[in-house]
Image 1 (cartoon, rainbow, N blue to C red):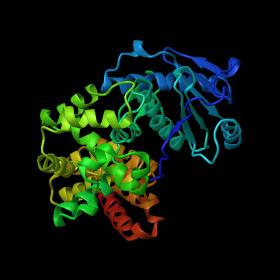
Image 2 (cartoon, rainbow, N blue to C red):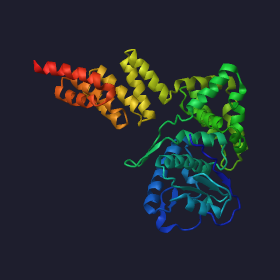
Image 3 (tube, one colour):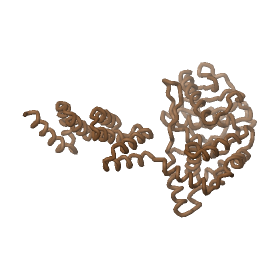
Image 4 (cartoon, rainbow, N blue to C red):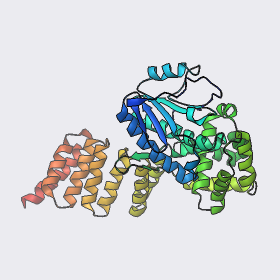
Length: 403
């Protein structure tokens, strides 16, 4: 996973070169955002609409009062790296990743600055991540770092539905493998070096986190996910009580201490770690779901296999394997129409052509659609891997249709 750099350029008392100008034709203004895009007002409006939708998604989690905002949230998106660098060179020194949040004592001057990297998926993911940081710090100037980055990662796999103008939450399991490995090592050997202890995580600053960045991101995301999604309301309460303890103008260390005092002290680290480990066991990654589904299918547990592969698609809708196996499941359930749908979708997602043609041929044969079966199997014959099997079934079809 691409390393997400910390954004926090605290420019208290910096020059007036920060966002202050009227962007004019390249600007879009919405209820909570003022967005400038060098590519034009069309892109500015699209980004502003999306960020408004994500503002609502973020706030469905935090329940801040938007009326307390002293100004709109400023965003500047440049069409390329050169424009981005030229703008930042007037304000800060050094190289920067694709997004930087410049925060000032005066909220009207604070601005999220980014550029279009040319990779739409990566750009959207980074915009969601860093847009959340801007959102949170607009209400809580200096939040605890674990909460800020843990929530930013928690939200970053979500998507913007332009047709409905809403942000749709999608779970982000990008760090689950790292986290399971680290926590597993800790539980197996009680090796404290395998993880960041909870007391340390809750109070870490940027310098400390950078020294253990993968572990920090994995644990920060994991703690947010666990507290937000645990079926035990006692753990949910830790997160909500902790957020309620945050003060808009307190320092990061003061807010971290407040969260710890008001939310974490009444649950022992041992109990929290045990609940955390149980929660992790219940969270399946895409490979785990696919492997579980394959095992269930091989064992003849079609209903379980269907559930596993459907959940796998929810995590990765572009991989062909779950679709192909769902085709096999539907075939096994004698739902030949459903099987064909999933086999065709698997082909669209990059599955082997010969494999799918053969599967479609077998499915059509079972559905007594002999002409379709012959057509698919004839195409499968052209594939070296399925020539013999397709030939055998074609001969069987010829024998049946000759009677």
